[in-house]
Length: 333
Ligand code: AMP
Ligand code: TRP
Image 1 (cartoon, rainbow, N blue to C red):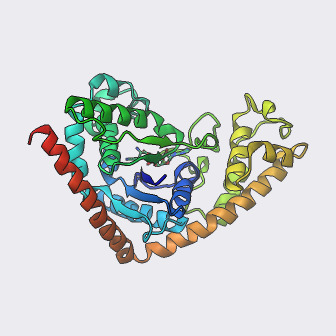
Image 2 (image 1 turned 180 degrees about the horizontal axis):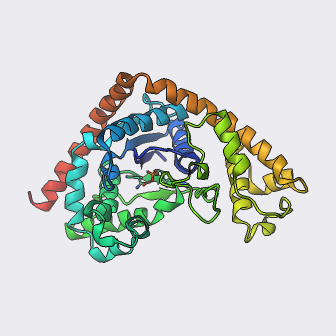
């Protein structure tokens, strides 16, 4: 079956190993399958739901495109663009926000986490963020959406919004209800400092994550300092319960080497953590360093990156403009 793939990454800096293993690595595989039509979006409108410095934002938009390219997404096969250049996203988000229920949005855990204790001070944009995400997906009749585990709830909401719109406007199947593509394993990479916390761009400790722009020494040092427990390497996956740090590091190793967790456990059983960490740092350097070098090289050529976005926006714009026209007709405009 031909799949229509859509996914987005926020240009909020510090793209890390979690973004890579949870999302971008899968984008590359989908890009390489010629049966797929892929669109990868730098979701800059989502980024401004929390305060951004305009100069930093511009830099981060280019860095996100550079990361897509450096990881292996081919702009000749897939559309790469940034959201703010296609105005249909904002228009569709408004219309869809008028069919979405407050009760649905009140359940979103990401808002609760990001808004923290003082909800009153969060922006309205942060609250309606998942509706904009639904607009992104639905404008392109996307069939599949590859994301990390943390976006599951937003995708369920997107499906509800599509069905409600189709119902409200008596247009069965008009908005395509998308399927999530979330890997069963390793779709939630945890912090190197706390195996119960997600690896995140906004963690104040840089030691908590491997950034995709880290160099050899940074990667080796971060793995050396990663939290572990005093027990020896596990003998079986049963030994991993209540050992979140060991589970996370073995998960990272398995994902990077494309092995199952079971195989990795067998490889290191009976060995000590320092030996495992040395090997983990080696495979990470092998994987991340070429990407990191390529990102830095691409960032020297802003015109090239801007041209890719311009070309991608033109292509995405054609698809999205047609869909938003149909949406407006259905609404009665
Ligand atoms: P964001 O940086 O929030 O725009 O996320 C971009 C993509 O990376 C989304 O598909 C997320 O689900 C994924 N992602 C972010 N953090 C992690 C993590 N710690 N583990 C796995 N996937 C992640
Ligand atoms: N909300 C996603 C995240 O933070 C990013 C995103 C925006 C997205 N629009 C999307 C992901 C559409 C998939 C499809 O990770």
